[in-house]
Every structure is written in C-alpha cells, then in structure tokens.
Image 1 (cartoon, rainbow, N blue to C red):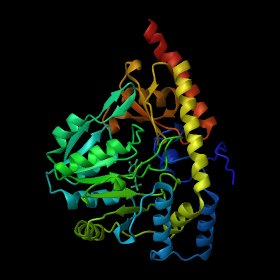
Image 2 (image 1 turned 90 degrees about the vertical axis):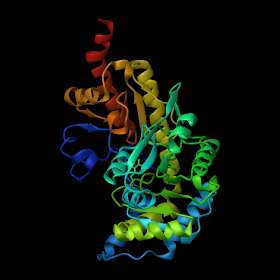
Image 3 (image 1 turned 120 degrees about the horizontal axis):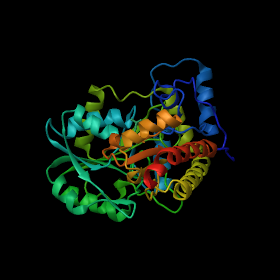
Image 4 (image 1 turned 135 degrees about the horizontal axis):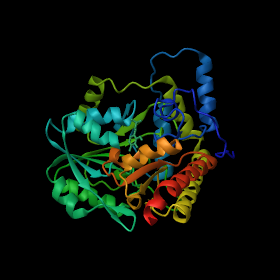
Length: 388
Ligand SMILES: Cc1ncc(COP(=O)(O)O)c(C=O)c1O
C-alpha cells in the first residue's frame, strides 16, 4: 500500500506532549521524539478491532507476540532471538531504571558516550549511580567514538549505556565499531545495556547491526521496541533481550519489583500488527525521513549557513551545530520561541550547548514552514550581527 506522509494531521487537543503541553501551545514543535504521521493501516485496523471488543482488562502475552518479535529480527536483521531470552516491559526507560539498580551498586560508575539522550543522564542520577561521561569526537561533522578515552574511562565502570543507532548524533554504528565496544567492555568486565530503539530508522544504504550479533560474551542486554519506528510511543512496550540466565533472573525480579513488566492490551495488538504486516509503511517512512534530512541540509547550506547539520546515518532527530550563531543552544531556542514560535530541543539537554536537536519526522510542508521561520530569524537577528 502507498502511504501519504505529506498529509498534515492536526495533533492539537489530542493530549500530545509535543503539541499540547503548556510550552508547545502556539508554537511549531519540532522537538519531542515522536512523529506527526498516522500509523500503518494494519496497526490501526488491529487497534480498531481490539477497541471494538470494549473490555480492557489485564493483558496476557500470547505466543503470537513472541513469534512476531522473533520473526521480525530474524528476517530483517539476521538476529536469532531465543524466546526464553525475552523480558517484556512497558518501555525502555522504565526498564533502564531497574537495570541500573540491578547491574551497578549505588555510587558505582555507569559509562555513557556523550552527547546522549537526556533520560540516560536522568535515570542514572535518579538511581544514585555515578555517571562516567565518555565524550565522542566530531570529525568533519560525523561523530565517532574516541577509543582511547573510552578505554580510559570505561575501565572504572560497572555498566555501559550504549545507544545503537545513536540519539542525538544519528550515528548507526558499524560492525567494526560494535566489535570494538564489545572487546573493550569484555576486557574490563563491563555490563553493556544496548538501547536499539532507533534500529529501524536507518538511511538508504546504511545497515543496522544488532549488538547481539557481534557480542562475544553474554554480559549484556539489548533493548528493542517498535514504538519509535512505528510511531507508537503512547502505547509503551519494549523487549529486553538478556542471554545470560542468571542476569535474566535478576532483571526479571527487578522488573517485577518495579512493576514495569505489565503491557497493555492495545500495545500488544499494535506490536503484532506492526512487525507482521507493516514493513511497507516503515520502508516508505525511511525514504521520507531521508528526503526530509536532505531537504533540511540543502536549505541550511543555502540560506542559513551558520547552522550545520551533522552527517547522520539514521534516526529522525537531526543534531545541528549552531556554533556559527555565537549563541548557546538555550538562548537560541528561547529566542526562536519568542520571535518565531518555533521549538527545537536545546543541546544542553543532551550534554552540549553548541547544538540543537531538530525532529524531522513531520510532513515536508511542516519542515518547510520551520525552515522559513528559521531563515527569517537568521536574517533578522544573526546575519546582521555577523556583518556589523
Ligand atoms: C535512545 C532512546 N531510548 C529510549 C527512548 C524512550 O523509550 P521508551 O519510550 O520505551 O521508554 C527514546 C525516546 O526518544 C530514545 O531516543
């Protein structure tokens, strides 16, 4: 089936954080990481059928659920997941808190490549574990791991939070890079929590490698979810794959203690329909997001040259270098709201005040409107500063 990602669907008054929270009212929001696209038809149909039934009691996870997850990763990513290795949770971030409590003791160090998704900072601090930042380097606008810095810092860590593909830099780690992460962490006995929520959102010609397929030990867990790629964040669900029996038993107990293991009836139906019947939607989405990225890069290069998007390989979150503006990200984002009613995420949230994060998962016309507002802001407030 052919989908129309150009269709503009108002999300106002749907209790959307992105569009309806107090800060977003009256603004054009290209921030919070969900998409402004209607979900795939098979997902909608499955939800309609389930809603029509009219009773929404506690949900049991059927065989069909596990079969959908296993078949999807086998077929698309050549990763064979054993059913007994899967723990289900209502989201990756709820699971992360329990994983942190289980795999590191209070005060122990948890490694994190920075910049990083904001919840990784928050969850680690909330769990009273000590964050060990491992800064990445940007080479010609493309982020890379600094292996020497990683080696120096990770050796003091009990656990590493790793993000593959990476939010916010848009890197899709190569097999070779993943092998190196595995090798270093093994050498130092570091448990790897690999968050692969963005794994379907790769650009044309770029292949995602599941960490599980290169790992040489079983001292890790991989967190997957259909919510980011199929636009189902409001129906939370995640699969935490844990190959080691002992670790899995401990994590299962922690999920139980934290009550993060219960799924909703609707999430289960949505996942099955997404993985079993919605691959065509996903493939069209990938093309659309890549075209949005190309459009934005070309636009900025031509009209707003002080903004430099990084060289990404995946995700729909574009990390843009704003050093040329001479402003911090917070200042720039505040001024964009005041003067153009345009919202991005300031880089401070992710550990770098020289960048903003722009959510490109919207119809092209929305992105065009955002670029026009950005250009007006640039013409009125920045280019004049630069030339005076
Ligand atoms: C890397 C990463 N992990 C996890 C999440 C959220 O996961 P969940 O909604 O399953 O808690 C996000 C959302 O943006 C993300 O970017």
